[in-house]
Length: 425
Image 1 (tube, rainbow, N blue to C red):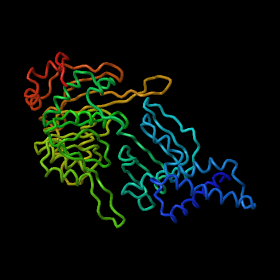
Image 2 (cartoon, rainbow, N blue to C red):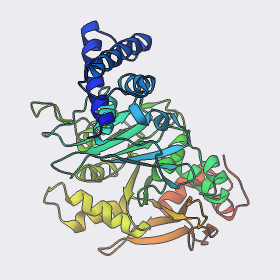
Image 3 (tube, rainbow, N blue to C red):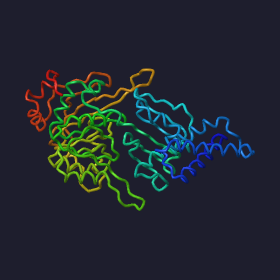
Image 4 (cartoon, one colour):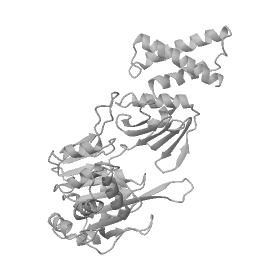
């Protein structure tokens, strides 16, 4: 450990003692915190003058560093305050981040693993999550609900590994996604019409492809009279909600009780007369409850990790089987085949520019057609040959069960919308 790191740790511990003795709120009483930190630095300097340690060359800098640690987020304070940062990655002492261009950058200020752990602990202090050897994997909403924190510590990881994902920086709409070239106008109009019905839509793609942004935009297009029940492991969806509510899973408490799983939430909202059940991200056993949801006559939307729209259907079936309810795979597949309407697949790819930026686009809108055999039957409605190529209508129409609903929403018929001759909100 360097002299500077040793001095920082000693001064910070002393400053914390002074703060606790004075019963100071570090968030509200910043000036008092600064005075107590200055006192701790002065005490350290006096001991240094007696030969106990090396004196600080820049005591004022140390005061600022410790104040940021106690009242803010230490060396990550400025990075967390930036609105152009999408994700922050912490691996021990190393901090990197992705900005709005999609480029991965390293943080210039040098940090230590101890400082970064202090930042994580401070972020979690405002949540009901705990991070220790008995609970080494934690997810939670932080920064006043504007970010999702995922952190893993030893013995599960060889060092602390954390990701902070900002997701509430803007309210997405289908129109804004058209402006970003994620969609074209005909596809946006089609998805708007779909959200006026009680359709069942799955949004798939790899991590960071824009699935949650697209889901938020589509839910933003739903009629204000529709009751939307949104269930998430950690809340990421943000859109104006007039009728309905957001629900977030809860981990078990210190005594192992009190857990509320995503599967529990889906069960509950089925009894709350929803027009649409939303699951932010399907990962496991909660998918089995979706077999009940899609058969309940309500609309349904979710996201799932997959490499293609077709793979998303298989992933949904596999997730449902994880519930261990001894239901044959063919039965689960038949339920989804008979009730799902669309899979919208998102992709991301480097633009090839020197800045390393990424492009996120919808690459496929796939209709699920009722099938007479054991596998899914699908029909592409919109396709994009590759990221960066145009999104084009294939000429196919949605299956009859969805088409009948769309015809009630669009008096001119859905075909002119797909062709781009009629624009919808």
